[in-house]
Length: 478
Image (cartoon, rainbow, N blue to C red; front, side, top):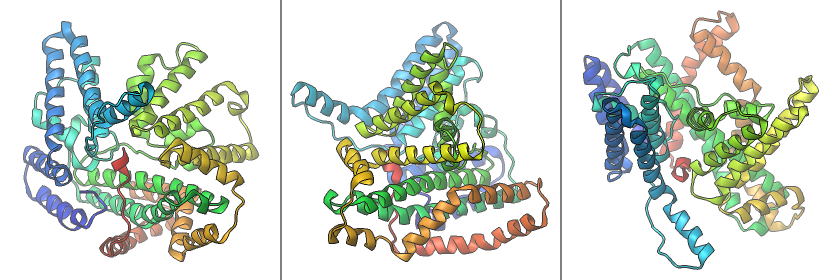
């Protein structure tokens, strides 16, 4: 089950939310959320729900072992890391590694054909963060197994993040308040994210998927740029839209997840981009890998090596494919470049900021081509076509023109506006009014207007979903 499905919007969420309000006490509500979360996951993964439960149980035991036998803390941590990465490795990377081994050695070992459990990258990282927090002493081991199970399986962030660290929600697992104003804000945030997903990301997916699946001879420079821009918008509004829905759902049930995106396409450096893009993932790697490696405390060369390691892991985290590894190393290269070239570290005026912004957008755009490509060869050919594909025959022009429909152009224009400074300004000022921090007349009226637009936006999304529009679930790849 995914958030952008009629079964979730019209049945699952209303039933769970109504029961949550009716039932008394935090303990009963926790059991409701745990049951609902397991049903939510089992709806799409009836077998792998037991894998997730087993993962939680083992990490529960590792953490208890650390506190009961403090002399063996490192041993328990090692077991926990090996167990979590082992599960991730078997299901996500075993087939890829066997194929690589067969290619290098000429052997013909059977390639494992295991289906990828949805959200495995998210719930294993969350379980690991819990055990590591206990090892570091900043968090006490959770004695209540069901409470830990709720943390890992909580359906708003279970299958696609954001990656919630245990210490960020530890208190709210046992003590949280329920209020109508925050629930209403959560509904508004959820519907906004749903609109991003259904009305922008899904339409951009049609354009990107059509072009990337086409015969390379039918894609010219116009088609290559259209496909690259469409995918850049698709992945942002898919990711950020899902994060908005998760954060909104959290508010409905009294949880407060941290922001996962802060308008990354407005960044003026790759470092700035990663402060704003998939913040929960970059924050996880920073806290649990980059800092333990030494961070930036051991000289510039070591800092660069640490960043390369982190970004190689960031790329591989997304999937078992050389394209993902390349994408991670590609971003690591630009971060290293910015570390060594003074131009990137010096202050500048508006012109310099505009140049840097253009550099980031172009670098990220090219990087996403490889992220989307099925193979490195396809990625290289696509980038080559973007800069030298001056072929305007009938086949390539017809393919390009067929995708320039009014609805696709409208979705692209809306995406460009919403991902830029205008979208950031509107969102920040409306949020400030909602928090009582801004009482300007114009922004107050606009904030009130959003409550009129939310039902209309929800209705439009439901109509699109009911009409059977293209609704890909991008997280299946991760």
